[in-house]
Image 1 (tube, rainbow, N blue to C red):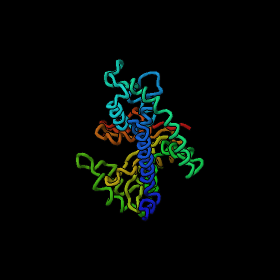
Image 2: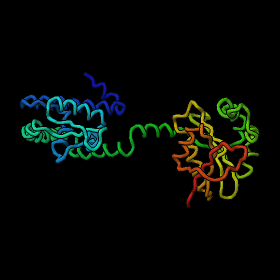
Image 3: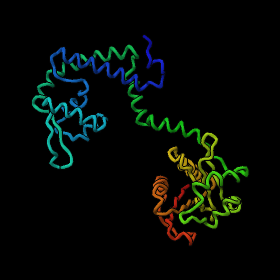
Image 4: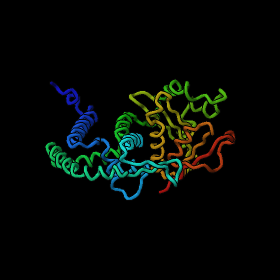
Length: 316
């Protein structure tokens, strides 16, 4: 019979890990049954941790030690408690948590099960050596890599590679208003700020001629965002406009545009990068805070009295 999962290659990598894991767990349960011991392989890491601790542990402490999520640990603890292998009591130091310790029955089980664990160890070594004699170190490297850069992050980064950041060019002058107008150019009152009217007509007048710059974000050849930067003097710039197409908010367009802006600033010995936001712009506030923008300074635009002034101090 053909191996369907194997035919999928790397796409089924996690599924094949799970298949191997399930086979090992199933065989482990059979071995315990052969020795007349009421125990399941999936309980091993939690029980082992509790059996080798001199004091009770909280559920959070157990989760941290074996790096399993809390739900998985709680389910295992529930099963162990039903078998009376552990004791769960309220935490005297924290009413919100509970402490877990091995019971008398659990200690009695431990004496019976230790010799079997030695057999498990030899059997698993023999099995893994058939795959590769250094399999444990390979697993260790995979484990560390998933902590360093998760699969979620790796997939997102591959997607981000399709985002291109380009400087403003005249051919975009007519494209920008058509793309941006439905989402961005109109402010809350339905009117346009005076400098925004000029921005629509002539980016050179508002930004480029004064030493500012404009970056455009393209995703699969579609304009999905832009950032417009004003120059105040030789060492201070302001993020005057930041647009992200609402249909592409979840692919980090804004973050990439700000990162490119900060890089341009450092390349040009800019000491301060400013931005003005409102309290209602919670998502934007969080975005700029992630780059360590701090509140402070005096607003340069008197018409923006309701705006929060934020600054990023760049050090060289």
